[in-house]
Amino acid sequence: MMVVLPSLALALVCLLPAGAEVPVQPGFDTEKFAGMWHVAAIASNCSVFLKMKDGMKSSFTIVSFMPEGDLALKLIWPQADKCQKFELLFQQSGQAGHYMGTSAQEMRDLRVVETNYSGYAIVHEFKRSGKDAHSALQL
Image 1 (cartoon, rainbow, N blue to C red):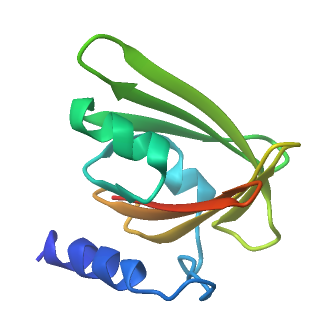
Image 2 (image 1 turned 180 degrees about the horizontal axis):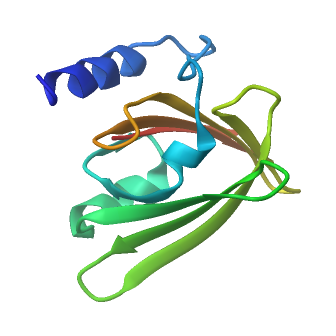
């Protein structure tokens, strides 16, 4: 049952039509969510991810929150010959569990769709860079 619920939620979020409002975990608790998360599955239409995915090993994310409430992510993706590391900072959107990242080149929208804070989390990210738009889900 622990696997079925996240899988079902992941499938339902994938079926959301473009432009549909992605839900956020009700009562999201930053203290419970902070820490290291092992990524069990990723689905994305991003061309960079699609090129890398076959060589990726089990990845993980370190989640921390700044004193003002912003979200800091460290993503580590081991590959056959190296480790890909990314650090991202997202600002609060005004709704707990929903964060925005902006730069001159791109806009990111990150939402914690569902979590039980210890066994699984479903995270949705939308990224727009120029005319290109990509979505990703992590479980």
